[in-house]
Image (cartoon, rainbow, N blue to C red; front, side, top):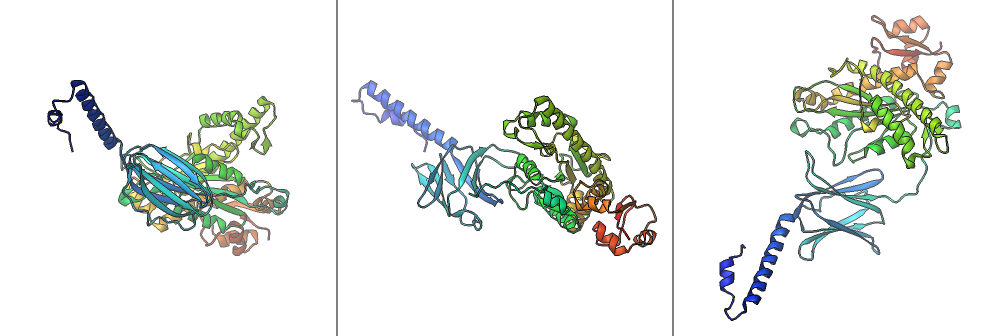
Length: 456
């Protein structure tokens, strides 16, 4: 209720000295300012969202305004407390999907009359991280609470080893569905989200590659949760992947923008990446291209890192061209060559890396196709053919595909008019053996496709 200053002054008894009356009036003014300030800075928590990732649980508080917060960890029993200044809870906590998380329950209350307290009852102690995110194009202020699982630190099992080389290891393809969790990516008509579409395409690509002997596809993001760009790169390197493919769906302010694209890292990005890896203390003992940089002469380390990145970029561009060629048969292309840009997710010094924009989700026609399972399958198949075609020609040493070539496997590039039966007759092998050797599930082949023919 607004203060009536004239009425307030008139109600001060005349017997009160002027100096005391002035002090009383100033006190009332100060109280009024506090009330106004608290009203302006108050923040409502209008939504609480939760995602489960493989190694942590993320809780996001959507706020109507920025709010200061403090945290407190308590034990016996284990609890994690978040206090939000001048805040109120306007969302329900009852429907949060807590199963499979370290959170047993979430409670709320008011502290000091104005502050919101959230109490997370935990099944066990957890390492925590809490931070405030500013508004973006799709969401307002957010407080992000990460609860990390406590697990024994283990070194990732290397894909390359003496045993795996002798056993003819698989070619490891790290498939990265872009965005995820509170980062939905681009939004299309009808609420279609990029993070959902690209995860569906990535899963289809994973299923197709898994059926081909000699390939081991690994999803970098397996569900609806957030991963930083650095974590995506690090996961691919920990797997010692032979290829990193990040899948996205483009967007533009003009709905007419259309077409699929394939990106590799720009040369400028490559230069900055090698410099960063050499300068960053946390990577001082890192391996680049299979060579340990620790304690190495700086000039030699720079040359080796630069050579590694140059070779990586060359592979990325050539492999990307084969994928683009296959996509051309499924979708319109935005550009008919592999483009280059400084995408942070592509900055691995020794893992060939590509970012594929499968179409414009902001284009109503392309969005409709991207949401269709049949079209997603076609897009995944085109990407898979490009990957398979490259590694049939350039199999990494020690892999099953390299061993097959060493055993006399022959290549044939499909020309117009070729059929599987004619090729089988030409080389004296069965159609079934060609299909098995190349991971084909049907008798369909395409002009420009490369097949490895087994020995008769």
